[in-house]
Every structure is written in structure tokens, then in C-alpha cells.
Length: 250
Image 1 (cartoon, rainbow, N blue to C red):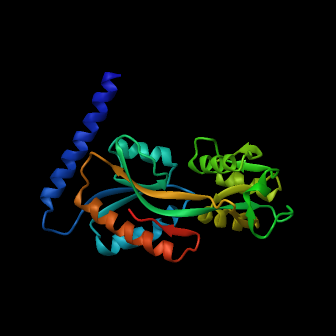
Image 2 (cartoon, rainbow, N blue to C red):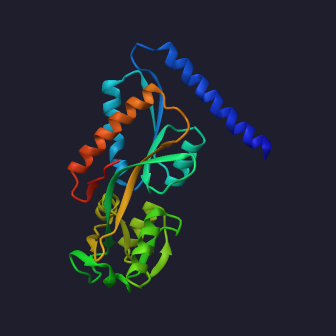
Image 3 (cartoon, helix red, strand yellow):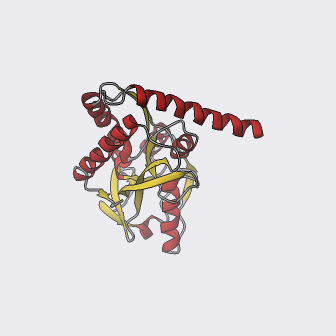
């Protein structure tokens, strides 16, 4: 165990040494170097990948951008270990070694088969008590929000399967095996793929917070700081074009 701890610290030291060398070598010149950004899949963050790539290529062609779309837990661990510069993911609760900057809130929608007799447009949460739901595992941030919302109205969700594969989820809904609850951006993608109905959940409205996650103790390189600035600009543009998103003040 002591060897693992030493190895992790050695990785951090080597990464910081390389970063320092690169910053000194290119000080006063065009920004260059590697920057890694995580974007949690199935979230509004996924819509930032292409605009971010275009903007970084246009403004800082010397920066090598690495985009990683993986699950939030993995992304936060990579940042904590110094192997990734930043990530946009759900959640904003304090975590040792990490700093979260609130970016936006995204409303959750019910995605259901068209032949399921449910209200169009929007639906109160209480009316979902008997709906067979396909949800992720309890450790997932969206699942936690759904469970907490049901607890708030003294009910429990009728979970018939726990699915985290988008492909399987689309197939299951298309075959009438149940409905799911997703953030607006993911709901539109899944709904379009299986010709499903989207209904905004109300009473209460459920909102998932998206945050920018960075290390709270490792310094950020100049290229990473420049990419972070672009990312924050794009978040504002994304929220302006999407009615299910609301920008949060840091």
C-alpha cells in the first residue's frame, strides 16, 4: 500500500515537472501543451465536445486537446490523481482533493414508450409511482436525485431494471419494457433514437447540477487555464440555446 501511495505521488511530481518545463520553454510564445478535459456522457456536457474542439483549434492551435467522455466517478478520480486537468460532470457536493464550480442546472424528463397512457408535455412525479422505470444504479447522481424526489413526496420509484448502457436503454424503451428518467439533453437523444415521448417532470421539478471539477491542490497550466476559459464561455452559450438549462452563479 505504501508503494502505491509513493507511485501516485511520483506520477504527480513527474507531471508537474513536465508542465513546468513546458510553461517555462514557451513563456511569452503561443500556448502549447496537452490539456485533458472530461465530459460526463449523457449530460449537457456532451454537447460541449465539438464546440470546445473547434474553439481550441481556432484560438490555440498549439494545444493538444484530449477529450474523455466517461462516467463521472472515473473522471473525478482522474482529476484527483493528477491525470486529468478538468471535467464537467453532475454533482456539486464537496469531495476531498477536488473543487467544484457550479455551472448550470438541467431539468429531468420522463422518457416513455408512446403506447404508455401518460400525460403529454409534463407530468407530476406522483403519477409515476406505478410506472415501470429503467434507472441507473443507486450510486449514480441522477438516480440519487430521483430517489430523493420520490422520498420527498413519500413514495418510492417502481424500478424494474437498472441500466447504464444507452444502447440497451434505447432498445428496452423501444420494446415497451419500461420508461426512464434522464436530464433533458440525454432525454432528447434517447427519445429520438426510440421514438419515445418526453414529459417534463413537475411537482417537484427535478434538477441535476452540472459543475466544473478541478483539483483543489494541483496548479493549472497556462494551456489548461486557457481551455477552461473557453469552456466557461461555451457553457453560457449552451444554456442560452436550451430552455431546460439554467446557468448557476459560481
